[in-house]
Image 1 (cartoon, rainbow, N blue to C red):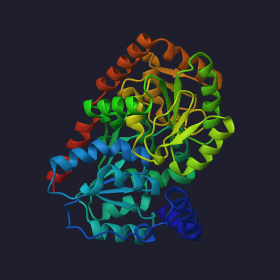
Image 2 (image 1 turned 180 degrees about the vertical axis):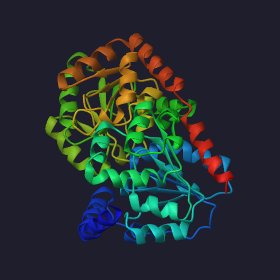
Image 3 (image 1 turned 90 degrees about the vertical axis):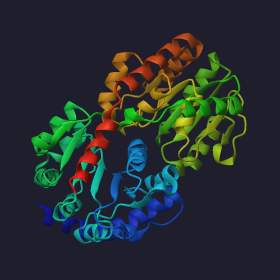
Image 4 (image 1 turned 30 degrees about the vertical axis):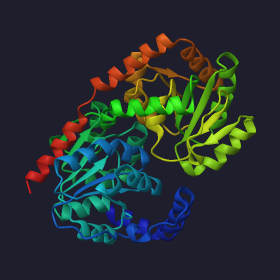
Length: 424
């Protein structure tokens, strides 16, 4: 099966090069780094580096506490962070600076994977969530590089896809090469087991996203930002929005202003390269707006602030009153609900939450997640929360408590890495 998988990738490679070059230019304004896609990497001392991989921006954010903790606990070991998307690569550089090395993951062809591993020769590989690359996993096994799948998530949609007869054998073989599958939940663990993961190497560690960094410094920075930009206005923060959601949110904002006129809307698209399109939508809706990239200037009530730079969303959540989490009004599957909850905000989200189902169920059952479906329901929920500050704060405290109560995955992940390193 892996032979036919590799053959299919080879046939598709010319189209993949063109597609990813276009996508990289669209996302970052620069072309694809073909050298990295073909396995180019700085040469590292064999068996020393810690390699952490996250697919894109969301996984890089989730991995941030782990990367920072590993850097602190193992200062003598270089850390290599790889991502599959160009925006993920750029975000990793912004998050970690020169503390770690950052690269794109090579295409999953045997010679590219071999070239990458020949250069890096990591002591351990840590893969976030649902990244299964058959040739790369086989290359790690061949070189006896322990591979850990941490905060591992397997949605029903992904499970159904991998269960198809065309992929089942391929996925089974890949999972059996993993040293440890540390799943987010019992349901995730059951799906990994059904796909072929070795039960003796399968554990439940929890979700690393609960360990999001939301300490006093972030909260203070958020309040300073609020004072500087918004004054005494109410602040609705719509984070990680996707195409098709901004018009709904802008219509909701118009309805919010009818009852809560002293309100501003913060729009933070998931992909900043969509900023021009979002600007067009804001203008068409008739709202005044500012772009964060133009500077931190005050925003008046009734205006929109467009966050068109990466790495600022948590600070704006900390400056807000109510949060909407994107990728949920359109069939994307939902993004990280825990970031606004961690800083004490009530959370609104649409019906498409397949990718974050366990967290969504927990927050909904606790009364801190309000389901919305359209502009009317977004406006009604946000207006009520803005008009009831005591209840809003009570819900926010409950949200923070839920995040704190479920922390601990970070310590478990660090211990897994430490165990593999000490065996070397």
